[in-house]
Image 1 (cartoon, one colour):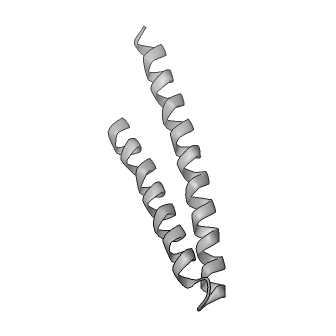
Image 2 (image 1 turned 120 degrees about the vertical axis):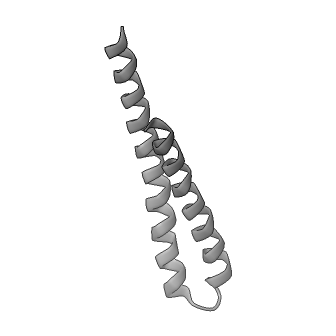
Length: 67
């Protein structure tokens, strides 16, 4: 289960990188889509840190229960 949580963290980073790529490619042609991808990038980065923090708390709780 913890490995699955770790992989989902990195999926958020992949979405953020793709969104940043689309921001740079769409900035001059379609600014409204670029703003949408800015939103996706910010939310994806935020979710990465949220999920990472949640996973670390879950791992710590699991270690504490084993002792």
